[in-house]
Length: 98
Image (cartoon, rainbow, N blue to C red; front, side, top):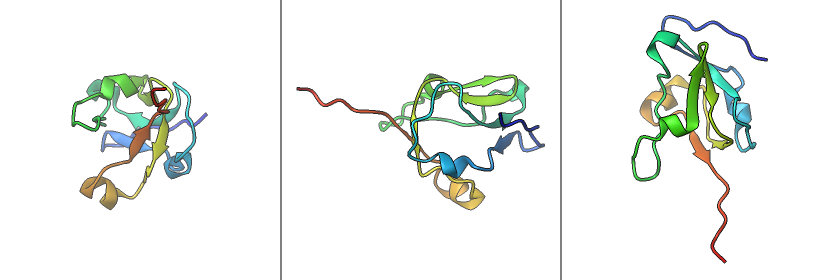
């Protein structure tokens, strides 16, 4: 596992976060660490802007983990990109109606 202690910013991301892009990740995968008193500092929104953080992320003992399987895209550790745009995207398999 990836063990790490969060710093004063309340969010520490995995150093290899960008290597997870376009891989199917299982629930429980650790994305980073946070101060447990503040919960997750990350927000997940769907395509209509609705907050769906609780559907995707859970904080357990300071670890920010996926609550369900997802495929990340464009994850970055570049703080400028994160501040100006976002940390990245989660994709899910889409089964078109038959």
